[in-house]
Image 1 (cartoon, rainbow, N blue to C red):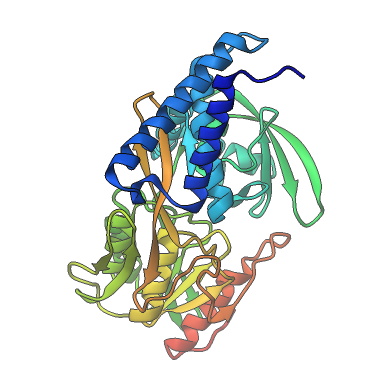
Image 2 (tube, helix red, strand yellow; image 1 turned 180 degrees about the vertical axis):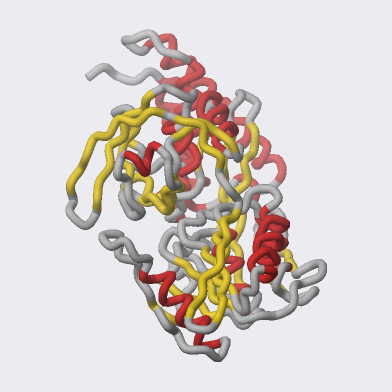
Length: 399
């Protein structure tokens, strides 16, 4: 083993000191003069390490790739230390994919997913889509895309790997948890138009009940939900099921606006706490629809903004929650652009229900447990929700 030169020893000492500051404190807590020294030294250390690697490593290196890896390493340290699996670093190529993935219309395979440790759990499969044609079911886990593992990746970024130009192919590794069997499926991407809502009515006994499925919390979700509820009410619905299964959330603003469809103005929808952005209380706004019996249908893929809506309707609109425990995210992120062309998708705060409860790791608990069996053509959980509504509206639950 060759002996390290003095410069390398000094660099190692600075690295150890910086690590100590990182895990035991922060340069911002030091006196002004020391703070400036250590912040400058940390930046100098990174630059020096890049130079040493480029000049001495036995293979040619890419400084841009090394810089990306350095930032990615910092984010991974945060994830480990604070058990935060929602913060990610997007290099410039990843950021482009991410920005494309949040569009409402895209070329893909037609399913919604949520992030789980092994990859992407399928929350919803759109009828007539390539995913539906290939036999992908709700609850399946996508573990790879074109031979690359998606485990540990941001769900939006991993989804972006699945999307692509219409007519091109993507190969997915898909595991069905009930059997543990892994399949390799080749799909041809198609243009997918993601509806914000779907709605219909069902006659249960002598009653007509409404169904509104909310697919996402993209821009305009509040207006779309209001229109869908009004639509089923015009068809005679006396009560409404709001289906949030497979809804991974979206914009916080739309969580407030969707809640405002049902909640009185001024009712607390959600509270947020952030070390850097302060604390905030978000209240319902606007004119709510006339109050009717509601049931909210949730499952393990109901997350983020969808959990906020479910909790708010249960607390302030008298809704009965049906299904299984929701995801339990409880934190929110902000995408912050970096000078090098990438971005940090960084957890910046926590959110709490109107009565101050955190959903992190616990989620929304159902009042009426119900589980859909994907092996049957019936939707048992939806049947249960309609039965609950029929009982609340005063009729018999004739299934």
